[in-house]
Length: 406
Ligand code: UDP
Image 1 (tube, helix red, strand yellow):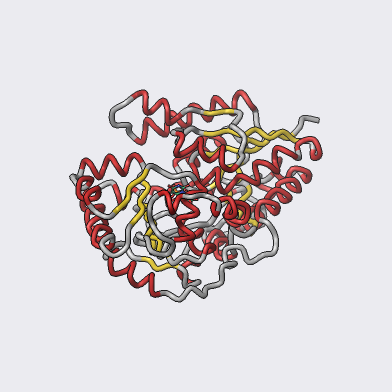
Image 2 (spheres, helix red, strand yellow):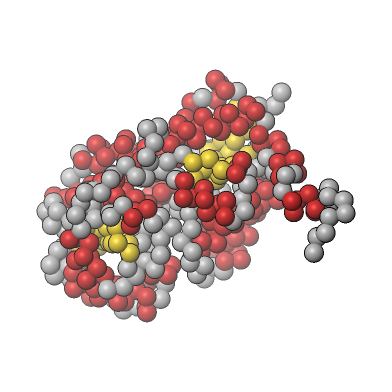
């Protein structure tokens, strides 16, 4: 019998962080369970600061396959259209699946990389999605489109919490495809906070514990126009007069600050800009900051677990459980005043709400995938038999003779 072949296809830094344990589990148990695991990367991120450092620090092996999408786009130079980027990703993904002939491809999250899941299912190969059901209900966000696309075409969906399962059910996704596992970021934090504690980043930056603010901003809606970015930067400059701010800049954000004529003011202020930092260094900053200001989904989760208040600088969040827990507040603007409010929040929230189960989410996903491989789930996961009880499906297949359809 042919061994089941699973490809894990990732694209950016939080994917590596969240998946460090699951990749290891999938690598180590191939013989025992009789499957093959191939680790692939789209190459969406490829600089050392956004990619290489994470393999090193988290002790994750290099991918077997790198689709090199980011490098090709960079070499091409000039403005790149969505159509070109997506077409390149589709082409490389299809070449990979033609060569590797996988039995399933696994993705995490809501990045451009997950859009390639369409070409996987187009080739009749099942897709697995981790972080399913997250919705910001903000259709302007590129990530929201990615989330909906992959969730609706996936065979197996792993959600962090029951609310995400409810969202998927409400969108009409069949219950048999959904499994709730707890938030996988917990596994990374459990493992790596002790490493973060050993870094000297706080003294290196000349700041003091609980007397500085950590900031990340990178989402398109916050950084791609001057109208969106400038008020946030003005508020940060004002706040930095009271607390030094550490702000690791993504290359695109630095370029935009320059383009919009804001970089000189930032550099003249009490904002310490850095390149993107290593995970351990950034984790240490998150833990020791007085408050975090961020538009990152992962950072708001980490803030909750680490016990640092966080201002989510966005219109909406796909993780409102952090607000409900009392660990974060949400505000797109007036970052100065809202950061002050966040500082006043009592730090007494339940730090376990992201994974209220006593199990490791990576273990749960691994065991469930093994069960699914063994039971032949992926052979029939999207076939008619699986939706046969659905009235509309029965009508579509002419199984309700004489039924009135309209
Ligand atoms: N992070 C990092 N270095 C930094 C800033 C963030 O290692 O300079 C980590 C952070 O701790 C979190 C992840 O990168 O684990 C968040 O990535 P990002 O904000 O790019 O992704 P998102 O969560 O928005 O998808």
